[in-house]
Amino acid sequence: MIKSQQQFLIAIARIEKFSPAPTILARAMKLLRDSQSDITDIAALVSSDPGLTADIIRCANSAYYGTSTPVQTIGEALQKIGFRETIHLLSLAVARLTSGRDLGSYGITAEDFWAESLFNGLFLRNLATATAKADPDEAYTVGLLRFIGRLAINQAISDLGCGLYWLGAEPIAQWEQDNVGFVQAQAGAILMAKWQFPPELVQAITGQDASTETREPNWLADALQFASELLPQGLGEPFRTALAEATPPTLVQNEFMQRHDLSPSDVWTLIVNTHQEYDDIRQNLGS
Image (cartoon, rainbow, N blue to C red):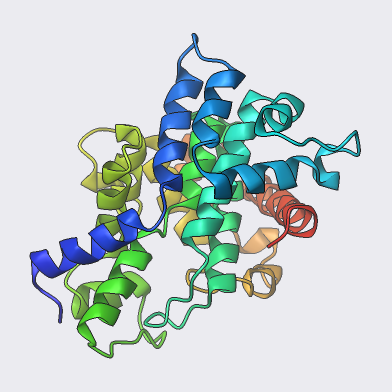
């Protein structure tokens, strides 16, 4: 078992430094909240990272955003897709960068890690829109990055040569706690705080497994917990197979659904719509 806080922090630091993209996204989200900011502020921020710039331009030129004259610069790309859609693409690009590596200790490939992150992001955004209880953009980002803490745990295990592997015999969080001494939600919250994401988003990551972990009510944390009851964890691309076996009658109305006046049929519709958006993004914006 890894018990040293210092070992944990070293692993966190390695993940924190591998790309400036998450910090750029955090700053962009702050600009979105500032009524005085505009598209040129976002363009200046994004252009500081060549990788993000290239990804945004590539996506803006995809069929997903229409077939107009191809854009050449980040400014043209952002003018084409708009302020809020830029945040969506930034969130998507950052999640793709951070999930673009195999998690050997979890037995989760980069492809599966990305698929799971994307599906959760889309589902959280749809849930926020349906309930009107949170900003859909923030819900999208929280969903995309909800499992970012796995990177730190996987890195810590790799650095120390512990040879620990999740074999699926128990819930992932239980395996993390028993073998590593902390869960990915804790690791993820530390990363999000270091990247300077808004406090409520950090709190949501902290409370994703048990919203009582947050100091004050946090809808995003409640929504993440609700999503974990619906969506299988650690499966990645097999989401389609796992969820295809479910039908509306198997969804039982729980406290979260009752509180937000959501019927099993409503939730099933959200899952179906999420599948459609997921497929659309994978087909048009790449994996």
